[in-house]
Length: 353
Image (cartoon, rainbow, N blue to C red; front, side, top):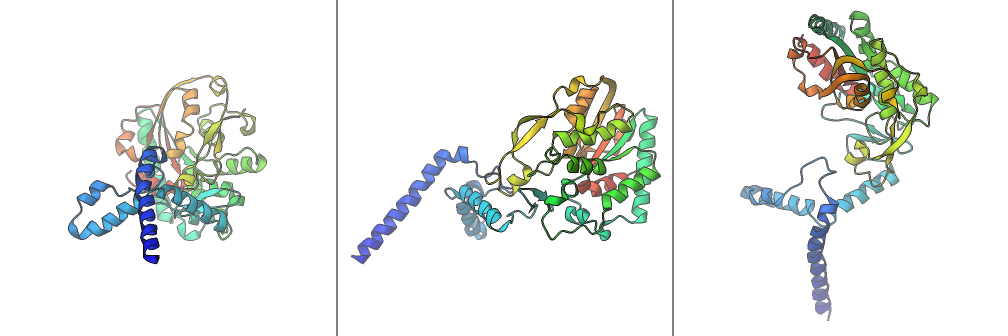
């Protein structure tokens, strides 16, 4: 009798497992398992093409990655870890207070947490600062010879601006961090307009707590924060702006932040509102100059405003930068934009001049 029950139980178990795969395959297009994971999933071709010694490991990875409802288990597990322990399953994501997520680390990041804390060992040496300022001035002078004005835009991360939502255990040691010191040095040792809007953004965040400038679950600023940042560039170019708190703001929809996606928390945290500034394209007279932006992802958020202010403007990613830009800028104004986690990339570029 026991043997029959055991055989029956095994049969039912195998039937459930066997049915799960075809059922899952029916819905797999809607459940997209790999679109939210920061790695490549193991596919069947990889298993079939494996050398004999790697076949067991790759087969095991394939079964794990493609097991029925694995993706849903990942979401549930991530949500439980966050709800019960306040932790993230991603090394890049630091959970903060009240549903805020912060960028902790990444493959190309310049130690964002150490920079947030203002740790002195992260600051650039006197030689590095001198070389950077010299390179920036040379680049600016070459561009000027070719009829182009250079603006350097250093964009703040959200951690210090919304420091009250940072988790305990990351005290600010020095109020002046690496970016503050670098910006101040470049401003005082070159003729280049160096835009660093930390103080303005921090002030606005404190004065208007309900009018967010950055997304809670994303690394980037939103449309309001981007406009306040961009106004620093307009002021450097002697162009008119409006007081930061005077722009009309309307809800534009909802979005899921990149940090929520990376940490598989987008199903656990609410979607965030996006914003628009209605009528911005009618607030100012259009400028006839041509503007070229070379920057990281932060500059993407202020491009709609830039395009509303200039007859011709476009953006390229900072990874496309070459020294040929100095001789052939192709524009009247060149904006180089670097978020403060990309300062190492800025210094590497300036070393070339």
